[in-house]
Image (cartoon, rainbow, N blue to C red; front, side):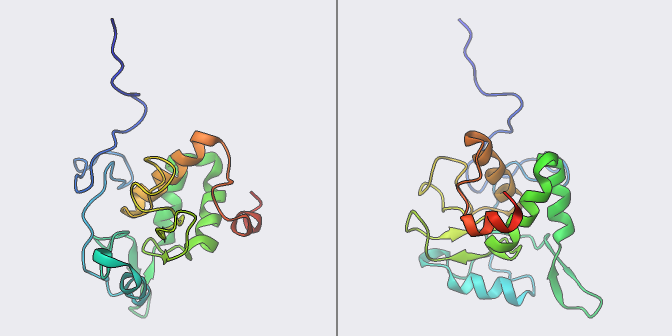
Length: 178
């Protein structure tokens, strides 16, 4: 008898707080989540959304706890590094990378700490693709309360499960032609 332990093409889903070894997953993408921090990375946008989070999540930077998704503009202002997002999207889903990049605009304004209290689950919408918090949505990949690289991975895997874009708001999708 052969027991299948997992699809070797799929990275393992690690429990919250676990991180894949450095270098795993390419392009800086972690295979698992890392703990949120209280560092707003000098970003007013991060700080705004961190302060909106409910309960024990309030004040937490869940989307970019190591401040890897921000950079300084020529004037020293902290801005989102959308080039990193596009590079990861091209690596993870090259055929749909432009659609994913576009979708992150209306869903979160490219902010991995974005939060909207309203969601279909009633538990809030989190991250680049405004997905549910853990355990409140449509299975293990419907989780936006994770580091930005895992938000990307989760969104792609959720869409691959259904082969549809219908999870995301029709207004967001229509502006991207999907």
